[in-house]
Length: 207
Image 1: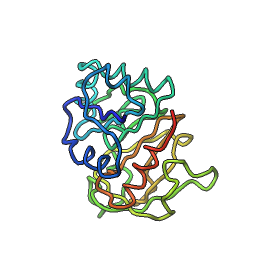
Image 2: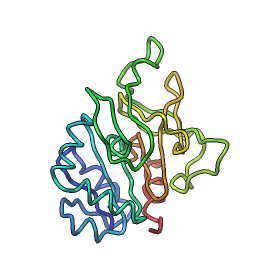
Image 3: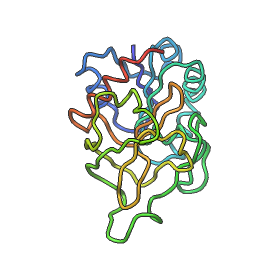
Image 4: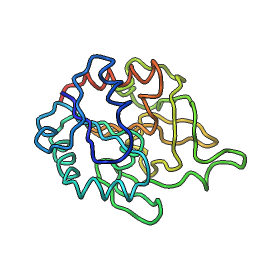
């Protein structure tokens, strides 16, 4: 069973529907016990980092997610959920993350060229590092396949964890991993067939 962590941040029905579409036993859950019993965990999120981090901690689920991930249970953070995996974010101040991925989250506004709209909204190609094997979560994805982004902030100081980038002016972090922890800056549930392939690969992972 895949537990999609429901901590009151964003509309997660489309993500739930996508997992069900590919035949996964996915459940929306705010129950610590159910999340601990799950085979895999998905951490979604939209909105501001500080607010989401506070809600996750106040719900008591931050410790549950962290502890299960540290045991080796596959964990997938999506969009803001990916950013929460980092050590900290500088979105409207400085906020502590879960610390499962080394690095921090910063605004793309200082680095994108003039004429590029921020937030970055739309389809962009994925590029995989040439100095390491392709991550298993991208087993069925080709270099240059397009996925759908909606974000203003991105992960940095995380080169060892980067498993995919995208170009939006400069090269930006699109996906990260550390052990059994994975993070996607883009929305697989809004990324058509490519997104479904990524979710299916996550479902097939062994803890």
